[in-house]
Each structure stands twice: as C-alpha cells, then as structure tokens.
Amino acid sequence: MGLVKVYSVSGWFKDRSNVWRKFRIEVTAINEGDAREKVYTRIGGGHKVPRNLIKVESITEVNPSEVKDRYIKQLLSLDKLVTW
Image (cartoon, rainbow, N blue to C red; front, side):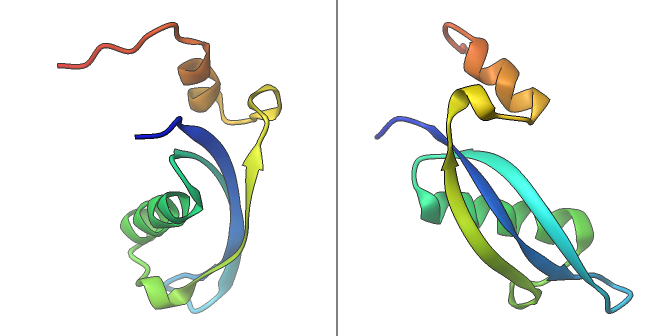
C-alpha cells in the first residue's frame, strides 16, 4: 500500500438534459487509475451518469499546499485517522 496523494481530475459529462457539463474534482487516491475510478463513482452516483458519458481530460497530482477542497484540506491536516 502506497502513500495517498491528491489528484485534480477534470473533464466533461453529459447530464440528463443531454448537455455536456465541465467538471473539476479533487480526490485522494493511491494512483491515477484509482483517482479516475473515484471520479466515475462520484459523478455516476451523484448525477446518474453512465461511465461512457464521462470524459476525463486530465489527471494531475496536486501539491498539498495548493488543495482547494475544504474536506481534503482537513484530512491532510490530521496527525492520524482512527476508524472503527
């Protein structure tokens, strides 16, 4: 298991009204493939869009000091995370 990184994923998806919408999402992931899967899950689940209507244009690693997502910033500031 590797270190978790922050990726910025941008692209387009076609919504229910048949309009292409631009998106940019920051996600935490182990690698670029994992980041792509998280975006498919988030957009597909939230907007009921099948994967073939989600077009990922770019996946770039983001420096932790440049993260804009408030939730990810809070996760990065933790010393440790305990779940049960």
